[in-house]
Length: 279
Image (cartoon, rainbow, N blue to C red; front, side):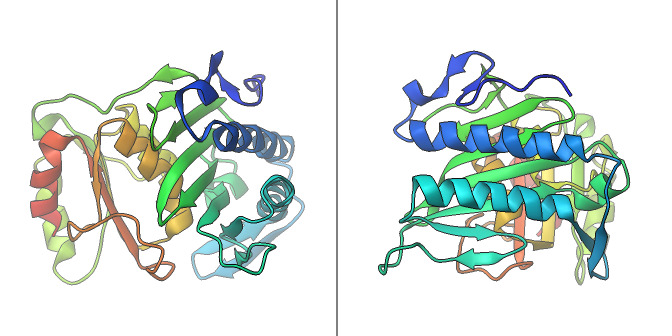
């Protein structure tokens, strides 16, 4: 693996200077890089893979990365709550309910990882007052850090990124993972209008790819959770994407149960058309 960027920096740019959440963003980047090192140290050398459900698995790397992030966050911000895929919700150390919660997917794309497919990442977000304010998605195989804050730009390794600017639906490269009654037919019709559909098996990284124009549309129905989209949704939004649920409502709502989330992210010029096709 290529050497990771220095903690708190991405490609040489001090992100903390451009946001009120500089310390939190720097910490998220540092922890994402440290977790990425764990992932690469054990890549294709896993000792244990356990079935978590009919179509999901968990590895010792999931647990190691999750523990790394939680311990560091609790040490730095003991009054913040913590919510991660494997351990669920952990309350803040104080008695009062925190209005800040760190949402972490320690290894998004675990099935890819367990099978030696190099498309996985770690996702770390900070939510304050019910909305994501910091988001970091790190791909250790390419040493790519996608990062943003609610009051700053979206960056990849320190350089600004924007959503794609293709004009025609026929030119779009999308990922459509939608199902349900009537949706299969709508999906089939939508696929006739676009260039290519790719399923990558890693929601956070795929959504981050919308932010930099590698994908033009990300659409996924029920089956995803807060940890899949909290960081990458913010990154895509700050890069210029229109991000909603598949019914056109808000894309982020912590009251929504796990596995019941949906997300549609696209350049503003194509979002309405894709929403109409898939709704």
